[in-house]
Length: 155
Image (tube, rainbow, N blue to C red; front, side, top):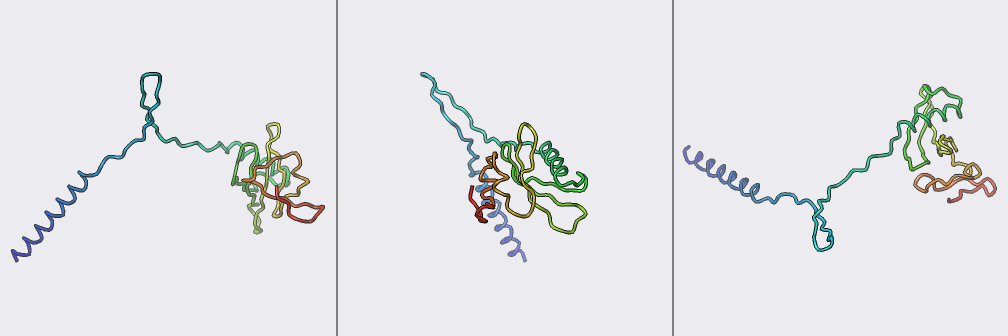
């Protein structure tokens, strides 16, 4: 019985020694530095990672919701509007009627003279003719439906 206790004590001690060596031997995380020479002197600048704040979309979401309500004739309280991408003056998202069992629709909007304009809403591709005067980024809109050729056209 004493032999088992001795073996357990030795194993426990060995574990503690290994854990101590591991944690003491770890090197601290290095902070990246950049040295910028300035005349005859050198200056060390510590580079800290920055997190870009996302563009505020709360006001834009409210304005787009209002524009969609006007375009669809539905009350603002009767629809749920989401923004999936917002790049500068262009946005894409979805609209769902709260009381409808039918799936929602997609919308494309552009800001002109400070106001959001719903360029297209529906479950189909936007008409190329509706996009005249707008330069949607490819991250938001890659193609449109050309009525003259009845084909999808890349933008």
